[in-house]
Image (cartoon, rainbow, N blue to C red):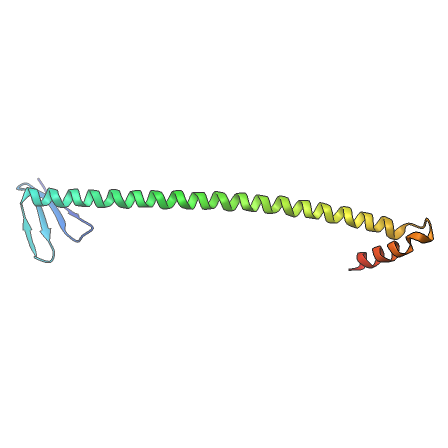
Length: 120
């Protein structure tokens, strides 16, 4: 059986060869064959990875919620903008009608005010 080496996140190396399962400690420079130590380290690594995945999943869920809220906010802002543009267009049309009316003298002040507003 050929030797297979797996580098772990903490810098240690897991070695599987014909003689068994070994753990090489880089700070010590030696490999040990204590199964309890190897499995303990492996279980700690699995636990750490599961915690990291859970945290990543929570972060992704939070970012998705923020993105959905931003999208809803953008849609709401667009709807409000369109409503404001419609109101502006209606007001402009009403002002143009007042400015162009020539019915009687009582509307002179209204016509002057409307013409002034249209120029602004």
